[in-house]
Image (cartoon, rainbow, N blue to C red; front, side):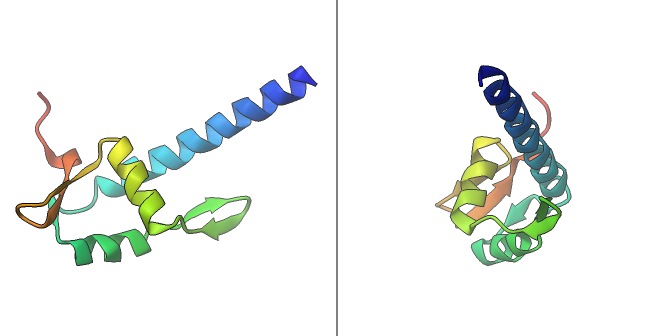
Length: 90
């Protein structure tokens, strides 16, 4: 049983890493700054394939994941989302 659980955990990790990689590659193609409306439009174009079907994450879940990965950040004073993939390495 422990062996099956370890195998399932390994597979779940691979799936999560695949989705994260997809998110990173997709966000790199977005502009440097986005209004909230533009971000919503880009999020709608982000389905990913899982179990042979196209799936769509909920908006809040997807934003949380992108923020956790360090890909986007919201700047309230400007009411914009910044694509952190466009920042110079430093």
